[in-house]
Each structure stands twice: as structure tokens, then as C-alpha cells.
Amino acid sequence: MAGYSHVAKGSTQGAGALELTQPQFVLLHACLWLNEHDEEGKGVTQVQIAQFAKVDVNVTSQVLRALEKRGLITRARHQTDTRANIITTTEEGTRLAVEGIHLVEESDKAFFETLDDRKEEYMEIMQEFLRQKTES
Image (cartoon, rainbow, N blue to C red):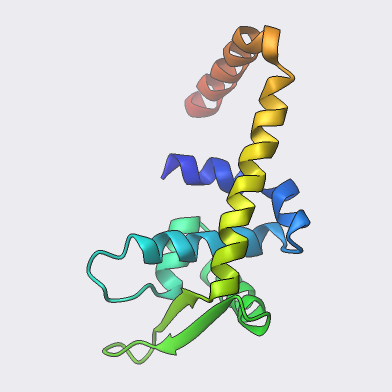
């Protein structure tokens, strides 16, 4: 999900205001988003969160453990796969994830407003940057 990567990378300022590290915010929000879009109702596993957020599985496990200690997520054994945990956000975790997205959006808006009269120049520079990254 391209938009999610942008949120993940741009979340440092917003995450700090919530007393979350950037990886904690990314994985907390990934957990919330995936659970909200779990159409099959099977629950969301740690592995799915790691893959979605593009974070190493071992790092994901450590970060989720910290979030669980803070009462922001819960882990429960998967009903059919005993090796897997189902991860959900608590009421407080959901509140922080939503608040964090709003902070990130405000931060992005403030950043891009400073470009006001130079947006076209900025976009050209970014497009050139992306072209060079995809060619290498």
C-alpha cells in the first residue's frame, strides 16, 4: 500500500508527540488498519502485520511485546494455527493510532504549505529523484 509507506516514513514527529517510537506507531497503525479491513474475520497475525508494514518479523515481535506491555494491543492464540498470535488494538491503542494519523497529516500539511509557491519545482525534483531510484 503506497500511501501507508508514506505515513510510516512521515510519522516520526507525530509518533513522538504520542510517546511512541516510529516503529511502534507504524506497527500499531498497521494492526488497526489490517483489523479494520479483515473481511474474512480470521484475525490478524504478527506475520501479516510485519509483512504489511515491511518490518522484520523479529523486530515486529519485540515492538508488539512493548505495545502489549503498554496496554495498546492484545495477543491471543490463533484458533487453528497454534504457532500464530492474533493481534488487536485495545481501546487506548486505537485512540493513539487514530490520533497519530491526524498528527502526521497535520505535519504533512504544514510541511507542504511551506512550499506553497514552489510546489511545481519541488514536484519536478521529486520526480527526478524517483526516476533515478527506479533506474538504479
